[in-house]
Image (cartoon, rainbow, N blue to C red):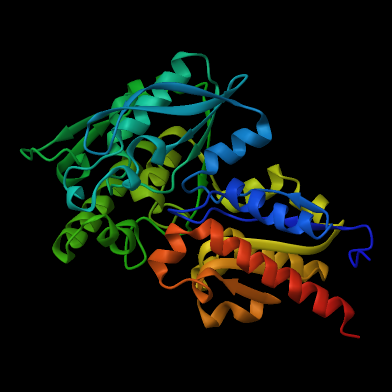
Length: 374
């Protein structure tokens, strides 16, 4: 007997950073449900962070384009973006993401986003007129100066030899850059709402995880504020209070001011592209997931957004995650964690596929028990 009554189980996960992609999650969970004769519909999702470009490309049927670029320390590496007609889908982390550096290589004074600019240049040189940029996973806090310099922004620096140009920026010339991109439309998918500067800004919140010392955080915040003043003077656009302005080290604020980029929630964009609202109407149950679900997950991240939409429609929503905070439990019907079955956090990451199968079986048992308890 199928208690779903002709409806499907909707799978709507984000990636488990460092272990499982959203595609991996869907494939594993789908297989476990199929063993029980239960129908699923998979909608892998992203929030603008690592792996989001691949997800967008999957929905748009875009093809990969491989080319040479640079990592965050300027070392040559092969990377790729996606292309569909005149639209290019480009992920910052694919070129100069933190994931490409060893922990001992974190260098906030020299890491930059130049490699991202190389990919963007390649795309427009080959006819792209619409850019969808995924900017999560950056290794730098450079205000986007590395990428923008590659793209045509003239940056006047002082005597510093740092390769993070924001650390000693004095002036900019925007004419060539703006002329080059005058017919290019840019949409940036953001995975955080943070402002450019201040206690919740790019330097204070994300600098330490990229190797910045407390002293360097203060310096970077000061320099980003100075850059914001330059952008305001040159373009007339105020970016200090711009939602999403602190994403990816501030590249979002700079591209908004210089190139009229649209800054949007990566989660909302992907949910719309996947037609989540339409598929939710036919769902008996929704299962979402992410590597860790905490209070931050409730603000623009995939699990929190999915849970909120499910609650609005009265659809039960369950989560499978590596770790979770107790504070988020009320937002889901139940949360299943891989660490509950694993020997350690490292074990849960290394053997995530195995523990995801176990957690899925536990979830299926819960659904059956709930369905037939009366």
